[in-house]
Length: 392
Image 1 (tube, rainbow, N blue to C red):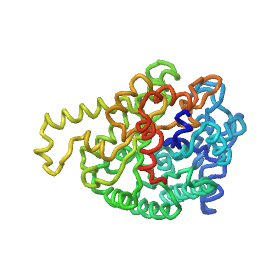
Image 2 (tube, rainbow, N blue to C red):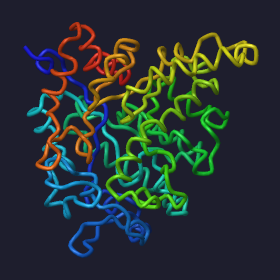
Image 3 (cartoon, helix red, strand yellow):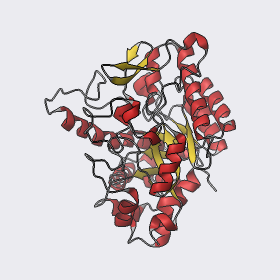
Image 4 (cartoon, rainbow, N blue to C red):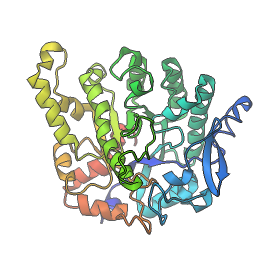
């Protein structure tokens, strides 16, 4: 029996390719012309948000496609993998590859809902966040025990965020999406007391806070363009560089909730570093522990009763999907804090295609986890995620 037959595998990071009518069919009538909608421009489907062309759905739906991001991608919905936007097809694919449940993240609104800020109209922004959450509730309703909704927030408005969390709890959502660097968007940093109502409600409800990579300003360009070619290194090399740097950038959010006392004040609130990989985590925490002791943090904060690595061990989690050589130390040191993902159907996901011959999830896990004791493999593929996302 292989690992995928032995365990009900929970994939903690996948994305929904939002259908063309996600917003136009759900926002109030007065916002329909400004809400995100699809236009076909020069043969390519493009999301137009408040009159601005933004993201092509094909760029974030590369599974099975013969092309290299970010310049080669499926031009239209018809060219994309159907499991990106169709819930029934998603369940069918999950059964084919051996995945029991998936945690679902957005694309159009940004990986922390920050893209909605470009609308500069708070009523429209809130309407779009609510419409997305309603869409996700509808999309997951065919199998809510297997398709796990993550609540998007109007994080720029704490009171509205609290109300949206309460609303989405009633809708059955399993966790909360939050930017790892809200100060990048004119808000308070994570450790500020402004966020206490959100942390308190999330802790009370047992909902983890998810920091997805890319929920801060893009690294490498003041104009915010992730594909900027300022160093003349080439667009593909630049894309690879930013993708790798985005992993490490999640250390900003992790270090802030630990060093800023959020983990101390809310000891039952969990945080998940999504799509960030895990290989860098042990060295990062060892460094934090060393500096913590070296500069006398406990003298400054006698109330902090744990080291950074101990706060992490108690309530922070991180996800992997392609690492091999450096994965073992992370698993050995933090076996109860490591979660498995595939990132389907994103460009660097474990979704083999002609141009991206990644090892399929079942084979990859057999290769990198197959020699682990059965209980450790089970924790990584199922138990840790089931605990964090409150699954039976």
